Length: 309
Image (cartoon, rainbow, N blue to C red; front, top):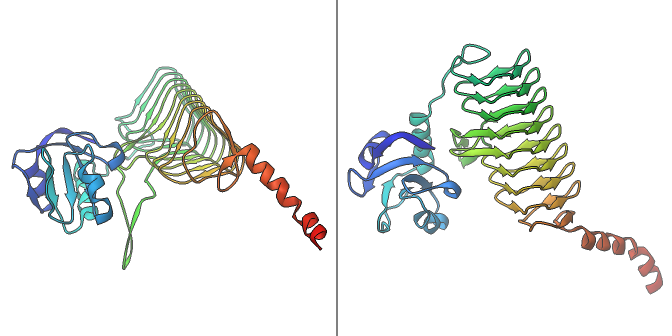
């Protein structure tokens, strides 16, 4: 998330009430998660295991819970609870805004677009031309939908990321202030849920078609002309490259990449990144021919045991 203007390090430290290392006027342009940070961004880290990764990332401001050596050209925000203070910044720069109508007055809707009854279109939503939203579609604030998109009934675009920190008293949610971006010519079935990014975008590429009852987690990027069948669950921060096919009931772990033109057969658990241009099956995931050979051999175990007797 980029701010509407450049802030200073001192301004940001004042908002969250913390100490800092760096010049008062060090420029702060935005805030993001580590996988999407760019120079000028704040990134937060609260575990020593990830200190080096955060300090060496593209982010130039690190919100951290220990005073460490500051890398050249960067600044530190020293907090006793970076998770909490990252949420404070999210609330400050992207506060929740009430919408008192079914279609927000700030929404921009393109020529020829049809919105069926009982849809909700939130604040600052942009919908392109000749798009069709069937009844009971929910579009949260700041969502972007392109031209010639079809979204079927009961689908929800832009719910919060499933991202929590465990505390002794329960779970704290990392607040979501990102967006969902649906590119041109996408088709989305009924009862799908696509979560917005924490600070970035969850993106569905042009020409992709999604079946009913599919879930897409926060900050995931799905490429162009993909096919995703029903009851598939895609975790957060996944990259699915162009022309990938995921058949029914596929599930993925977070933070992995599925290469271009890969085919993942039904009920597969994508437990790791896989290269493109191949067909995969099983849990843990393997190339389908190898996995099917293994299953055929398993069926022969009773026969082998009998021979051994």
